[in-house]
Length: 108
Image (cartoon, rainbow, N blue to C red; front, side):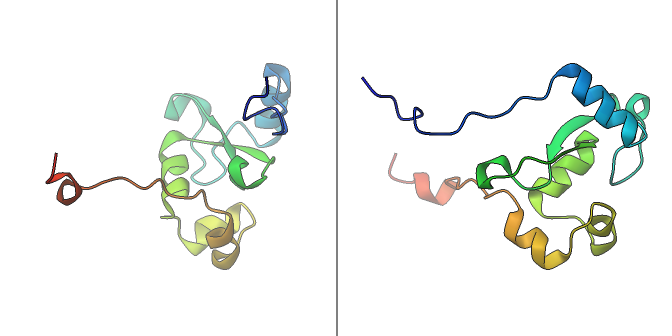
């Protein structure tokens, strides 16, 4: 019996040691705002290019900057800090999930 995910490539997970080395290389700071691990309550492993679109590069970001990044709300200056232009950013940003609004629920 085949499952739908048998043909999908498996994610290469980053070990805790590799993540700590990566954070240390980046100065233990968010790449966007510069908040330290202690200031923001922990840094998140953030994909520059969405994993769903084939991205594999991971950088440390605070939760606030990661949310802004995923929602497309970073400025050109902030994007420059991670080596992206606004045009490139629009192509690699994670796809937005479609949600139904209240107007779609009138028949339920």
